[in-house]
Length: 291
Image (cartoon, rainbow, N blue to C red):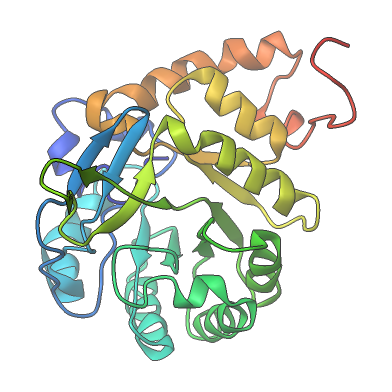
């Protein structure tokens, strides 16, 4: 799949990518009301990734339903809508509204955005996460995914709470909180001071989170974080992810996802497997690589 916020609304990529080949598309996170996002700078490149502080810039659910969803539904692949609310009630209403269209495969609850006020409140407290997922589950008939933040002490606790609340899967991970500084001007480079780090730098963190969650729950995991090569994909799968989302790599290589799809059969064959399911969670953490 392609991660929310990195693939636009798919129209932007249509000339470059056969979107019907993707396992799923997650368009930009939508909110109840339009958001103008954060002040510039909004993105800063780092030595091993990208810092962003977009601030959930979007036109709101009304514009999404009228202008974007009809096109997305015509592409020929699964559409998973990422939503973010300021309150539990907003999450529930958003999920219900998009879920009843009959045009989407799932809802992703963005409870982990570090770039907006209160963006991680539901993703850092297991009890709050449980209540939110349970309330959303009660008002929504499509599968629910909870996208979690690594900026917590024990991500496994939050994942278990989401699963117990009724989540059909958890997405690991959203960005890692970071910042960039212009030392000559003695100012932060992002307009919001801090932002979310994505890309290759966070892959080890994401793999750690997948391993910790897989060790305590069987809830399906979608791996996210620094995935750009078939080796990255396979690392997430054997660690315990049942699927992956490609994020930052879309910016510099829009065709990366379809290339990885092409490379997947050979990688599976190398392990003597015919399907992805045969290798998910097969990591033997008791052995060293040289054994």
